[in-house]
Length: 208
Picture 1 (tube, rainbow, N blue to C red):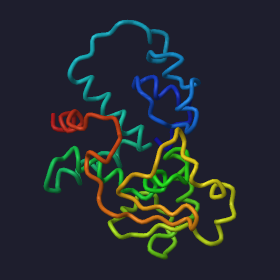
Picture 2: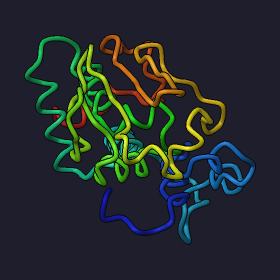
Picture 3: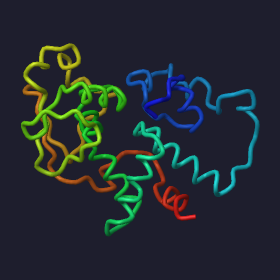
């Protein structure tokens, strides 16, 4: 998804749900899904019968777009989830949730994951005291994420603690807004991940 430069609301309308790609706007009456609750395009309002494959495909595309990913890295995460013991769908979600850019988003540093990825890429964070610029780094229980001293006076970090739509830091993370420091307490389980997706359909899609 890094190469997509079109309207973000168009993606939400295509999936029929809010993907929270634009921060505060997604929680307001200006949300594209609320204003035009049908797919984009000339035939968006036409009645269509969706087959099983279509349901699986749309669920896969939805999850990719929520976490703002291209197909190749997304498929790599799925392959890694298959190799691990447990429920593949839940492991896939856990791998996506524990990416550094998503952890930064969950802590409230950014209004959406795309902005969080940009902040990480620009080197504003440290992981366990070391500067990191790779958004896909996996954060593990006990890891500490800090804002670098040279970045603390920048605009994105002056209003931390104001979460878009009133969202809060999940219980598997500990976040100190005053000191701009966060720590992962434990790996999230499925009940702690609020991503609205049917992961089993994605497993079925790739298992065809």
